[in-house]
Image 1 (cartoon, one colour):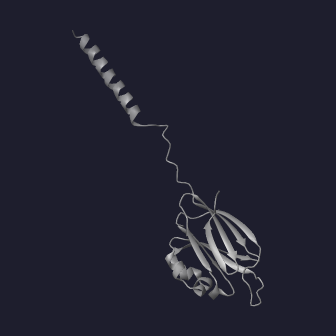
Image 2 (tube, rainbow, N blue to C red):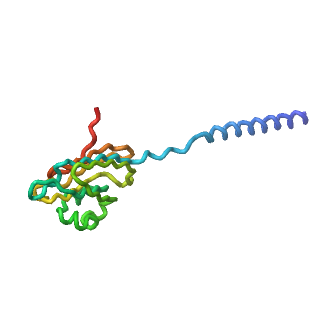
Image 3 (spheres, helix red, strand yellow):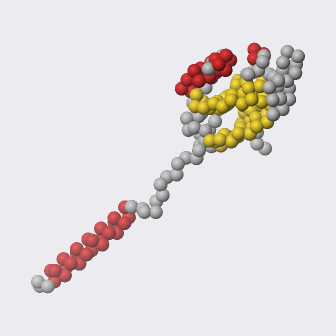
Length: 169
């Protein structure tokens, strides 16, 4: 009888160890991948300048300055007047401004921009320095979706700038 007790204890201990190994193997998944980060927010902007843009006092088209903004919020942009945005856009927009870029265009020019924007960017906005800004639509803005690519079109016409989502067929 003394011999049976160690054999039973050995089998019992072995069974407990095997169960522990099987259960601990189930608790972790070594092949489980880390979650992927969300996709970057990108904007592809097509800029088209009319051959009649920014007429001078004689009606002749003239070069124009366009500024493209990345914004966290749109309120300060919509409230600022023309001079504040053109003379000190950083001061006028404050913490709402993520980034901006300035471009010089001649009538008939086109340009395409493709870039990744900051995760803080919620809006893209534009301003144009029309000679006769009192008679023009000199600013526009559009909300963009996070973690997606936005296809945008900026159009500079005679006395109007607009930014819209590109129409797809």
